[in-house]
Image (cartoon, rainbow, N blue to C red):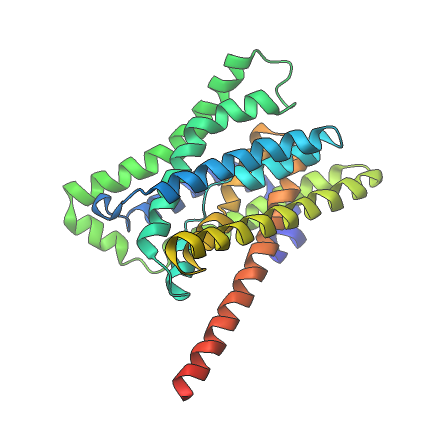
Length: 291
């Protein structure tokens, strides 16, 4: 993030690579997910419905206050689960299979419902006919999410040797995420720098919106996890940890670009929360091991 912000003049011209990097990041992630491991439950559907309700409700609650803040909060709520959320779930002792299933469900959901939602609520396409806007967004989002999944499963079932070789590439999805995040942060910084000085208040409100939406989703997810799974990790992480690279790209491409500050700030909030959780978990584990 720091590299992206400080080196934005050098990195922002490379923003055309973002969709390709997101594609590859999802491809390497989906290589690890077998269709046999996918077990959809009522809790998955309930969480997805809550995300949709929070996105629409948050938008309409804030639209009267500021439409751009409303868009920023909306994308923070509707954003699909992070591809790395299953990793954190596993580190914290939760159900990796549940998290992986929710990653798949939410990415398919954003591909199908996202274009309808963004065209209906965003002011960025107010001068374009509704279905034209839907088609424009659908063409951009659907292939970016669906094709990596199909490609990964084609490789899995047609070439075991290639599949195994690709899986042996160390942390490929992680490094793609790091590079794409640098470029995305550079692009966002470029938009912020280009704004007038009187937008500082708006930028702070967007960052605050990212914090509030992050807190709500982690807290609500943990409550659902305790109620339905008898542990506080799995649903909390699945609902709270987001694919912010995709969210920022959608904001820059299909919403008001300045709204991307909200999901950009979400990167800070969710990683801070994850760090605290991992520290507490390791501390608790160390105490138990000493006994």
